Image 1 (cartoon, rainbow, N blue to C red):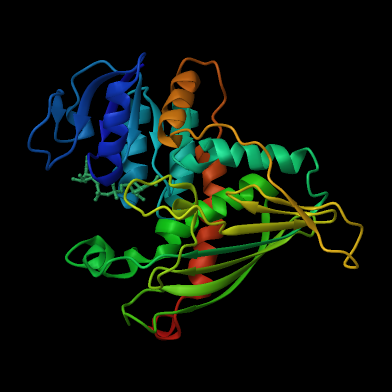
Image 2 (cartoon, rainbow, N blue to C red):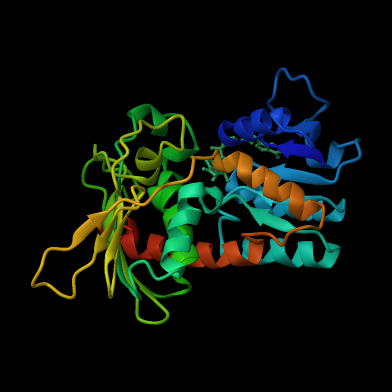
Length: 331
Ligand SMILES: NC(=O)c1ccc[n+]([C@@H]2O[C@H](COP(=O)([O-])OP(=O)(O)OC[C@H]3O[C@@H](n4cnc5c(N)ncnc54)[C@H](O)[C@@H]3O)[C@@H](O)[C@H]2O)c1
């Protein structure tokens, strides 16, 4: 796969490092207006690319995804677009429309779906390890350093943890339990007082009667979060603690430990814990690039197309509206 990477920032640099090390991927150019030094052919804008390519990673700021996807589709490049697929629904629809018109594939960077432990959890649920899922309860609470918000695009409402972090959780829950049919929530900005939500509680309803809750904060120190539990992100400390509990008719499971509680008929006896044998961990960003190469080669359908990710965006935007702190909602 002859690959371009647009946006060599926080996540684009990680894609570049992985792509460089992978057999079968030839990085033919990088695109970024502020990049100083690189070993690759460098272009300041997508429109200026002068090399032949099969595909592009779009890791530019989210509000530029639709413009960049349209430019990529016009050149016939398949695209891996970072999450969220776009910043609003109109832009997300533009992406699918442009890709369909150009007959190119889209894959969206909800890389958790490529995590080996997530695949195991999904397989366990589908095999009936806990019976019909009834409830899920998640807590994602991380204290982000003050510098994360200072002097950059995250200082205002764009720094909300809903679009940055919860979008991953929403996609994970949709991946496990299907479409969301209802959203409610409360949010707060009581600690930092900035013009964005920083903590809150969300309730989700799924088709089929399953419900889930997400308690979230980017202002609280805790051992609970996907990244902390799985060790997936090199920039976030690892605790190995479960942050997601799923209960079903016949038992329950914690993630990422995959501890299953069950073996008893009802509340008259204590549920018994069982720890299944787990497969070796993988690097989801690498697994995602491998999958992207298969999609580009025509061997696989995208695990998360732009149309699919648009549904994750829809729910995430509904959460953002539901948890907007009162002062922000009134403004
Ligand atoms: N999958 C994940 O876990 C994950 C993690 C972080 C960010 N993201 C997503 O990746 C995207 C980028 O986020 P980031 O944190 O890396 O941002 P960033 O600000 O660190 O990097 C963005 C880069 O894009 C470049 N850029 C800006 N305009 C451009 C243009 N017109 N053409 C080419 N390059 C341009 C900037 O110079 C910068 O280097 C966002 O959509 C974000 O939501 C995903």
